[in-house]
Length: 133
Image 1 (tube, rainbow, N blue to C red):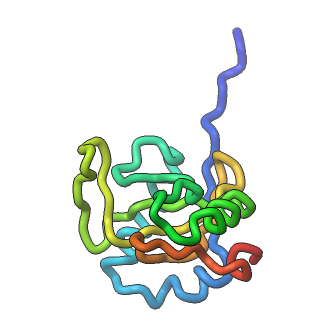
Image 2 (cartoon, rainbow, N blue to C red; image 1 turned 90 degrees about the horizontal axis):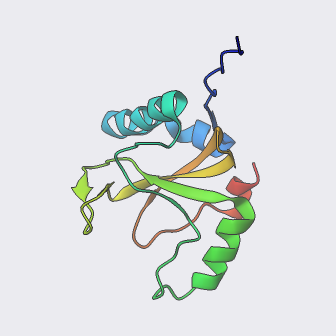
């Protein structure tokens, strides 16, 4: 008989700045963040209710679009909608969005580093300092 394949282990780590501010977020925001962490640790990004995207996907109308794309690619930055303050169906109806997103660095498909909580539109990427922690 063949070996039983083990389930991949998913890991979430905190960047230094994110760790510093984590416990200061309102309880409702922490609940949203923790829901995402629990989901990722058990299933990865698959089937998360909210939109998840690489942060280099930038609308054409952003003035500093090329700069954002370059930075996002250099740091492998992604963002995930976490349902804070509430979920709204996307205009396409196949996923949900929220005003706040969680910025993270995709280290591997099984390991991410949480960097910063931010407003979605217009979205500002984490500083280079935070990205390099």
